[in-house]
Image (cartoon, rainbow, N blue to C red; front, side, top):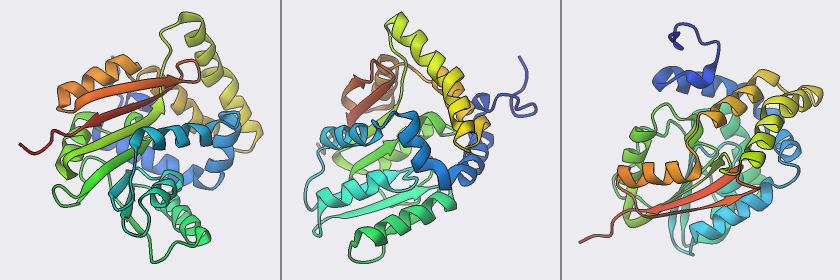
Length: 252
């Protein structure tokens, strides 16, 4: 097998720092058209998927929450609406271009104070131990350089009894749905993105990284092996989207 670091023909094969660097550059490049393209390629469903993830997360007034890999800030804003003035939210992302858009959205929404937005990576956030009641990730786990290191970091920064909720791509266990999803992601979607003025190669990476990402049940077992309790998931959009939730063990 080719060494993907030395010969990154397919960037979805990259791991560790090489993957983090590629993903950061990619999101810096596509930050401006990102929201518009998400609406188009999701056929307008992305907002409903985020709303369902928020229901699964169950954020409550007064809680502390982190949107890990916050991108342009859509989940972050939903979290802020739910935790209210008594709670606090933070966002962390490796892409400064995405963070700039998140800051603008925060200001346009009229929330009080400056947003707590930081540039950084999921494997090493820099937050103190046991800081958050809730950590959310929207289309992030598939892109991190090291998922196991990310799980360890999330467990470290969660309070006892806190929870992680992830919304991401998946692959259906029903073969016709899986084939249709692959055809859309790998064939139709990159062409659509190019027609709309986006970077076709970046969205080819989306398709390839989805193909190599664990299916929903496999990812749930991975969370359990990492130390999360009461792991559960639900599939959306005929199995091409999945929401996972896992809890940190309560204090003894």
